[in-house]
Each structure stands twice: as C-alpha cells, then as structure tokens.
Image (cartoon, rainbow, N blue to C red; front, top):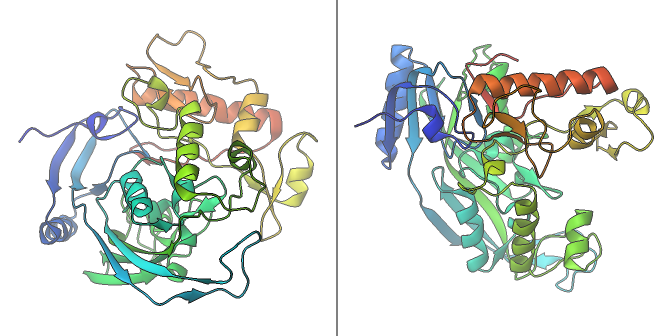
Length: 376
C-alpha cells in the first residue's frame, strides 16, 4: 500500500510524509491500532476529513489512522417536553424526537442531509461544514448561531488512559466555543496532567444526537440567514430550505469544498472569534461588532478585525510566489492554498495577519485548526 502524504489527506493540501498509515472500516481494527501505538509510545493522529488540520512540511513520524466507518442508526424515543414553546412555534412545547447514532467516520454533511431526508431537524444550520461526525464534538462545530452541543446527547469513545471504551455525556464533554474536553486534552492535558496530542485522550467512535421529528428547522438565529429566508430572527422555516440557503451562503464565502475552487483549499475559518473582557472590548473602535456572551464577556468578529487591520480579501504577503498562500478572495477569515503553497507559507501568512491585528487593535487572534508539527 502506498502511504499518502498529509497534503493528500487534508483540505489545506499541505503537509509532508507519514511514517505509518492505516485506513480501516473495522471497529476492532481501529481500536487495536490505537492500543498498539500507545503501548509502543508511537505518536498517533486519528484523522477524519482533514478539514481542521494544518500539517507541517516535514511530515509526521507516527501513525495516522483514518476511520472509514460510515453507519447511522435511528431509534424511536418518547416525545420530549420543553418548558416553553419557541417563539412563533405552531407545534407548541411537545415535540417528538429520535435518538440517532452515527459512526465517527461518517461524512458530516452527508449525515446532515440524511437527517433531513428522514424528517429530522436540528442540524440544518450546520450544513456544509467539512469533516466527519467524529471530529464534530472535538471542536464543538458551529455556524449561523447554532452549535453541535445543542443536539448532541453522548459520545462513545476509546479512553486511551484507561484503555477501555467509555460514554461521555454532553456535560462531561464540557463544551465551549470551539472547545471540548477532548480538544483540551490535546493542548493542556487531562486531569492526570498528560498531554495526548495530536488526537487527544478520547478517540471518538460514535456520536448520538437527539433530533426533532419535524419539517421545520430550529429557530433561525443568524440575521443574514433570516434575511435570506425572508423571516424574522427566532422564527422557524422549512428545514430543507434552511439547509439549501446555508449552503448557498457558505459557497459565496468559499466555505464549501470544491476541488476547482482554491478559495476552499483551506481549513475554513482560520482564527476563532475573540472573546474579550468588557474592558478590552471597550478599547475597540465603536463600529467593531460586539456580541455579549452568557458569562458576561464580549465576542467580536475576527473577520472584521482582519479586514480593518489592512488585510483585504485575496491578500498575500508582498513578494509571495504565485500559487502560494493568500487570504480567500471571498472571505478574509480563511487562509488558502492557491495551488502550490507549502505549510511554511501558510504559517508565515497566519503570523503576519495575527501580528497586524494585534498591533492595530491589541487583540491576539487564536488559530482554530489543529497545528501538526507547528508551534504558534
């Protein structure tokens, strides 16, 4: 078997060679490979769609495991009862729901599409997000005002520390903005103080969701999306139409994978939106976006900061070679490979943008993708 490079396994299409590689659709083989790598002290990377990964040009001296399992199971559940009906909700507070479990290797957007075909809503705002079901809870993916944590019930994982399977509920995953206990175990370690990068202590095997039996979407929270749909924020719309509209919006921003479109040769949004203290937010220009958070802090827009720090759409470092790294021509928040970029060129561009924003606004941008062999 020819071992692929990281460039062949990631949507950024950069990254060097791999020492060992396993692609499997067998659950037992997947777990066995992880166990053997840990016993041998071999660095481990379990990869899905490679859409949230920036890998170094030098490659990875370890084992890369790609989960190919794509299975979905649905079961009947009693109607759930909410304390209050959503505004503009003709169905009232009682809703029929279904538990749905998908294996980690299932392509995320195919899963969303499947759920709507089954008459289940709740995931439509997350349409078009690249990657797999297994990667979704690690990042607590989100878009257009909704996050994965709203519908996730539990995750079945392989616990590398205890060397056994376990089930983590939504509360145990400790979701935050683009954050989870799994992701934190990559960078800051678990309660035992051990760092588990680059894949974390818990390897996702399956994810279970609670989805509503309804042709209507979850309340539409994002102003631009509601405007496109011709409804007020907080109203519901036909879930399939919401999905189609979300996909159309994402395409205008280069956020739907297309091999012919270099604006999608990226990891999507490269920087997370900064969450600031009220005092720090006060120092921003008056016209800067501000969104209050539940904990009293203020979220602002990384895209706005980048654009107003002097980095327009399509920006590349002066003198950079043609086909190298540049900001997307459709959305400044995406760093892209214009066809021949190296990881080093992407990193150079990311650092230039981050330094420019910090110099102009005093805000430190945090990269969102997992950096493999790269230190920020």
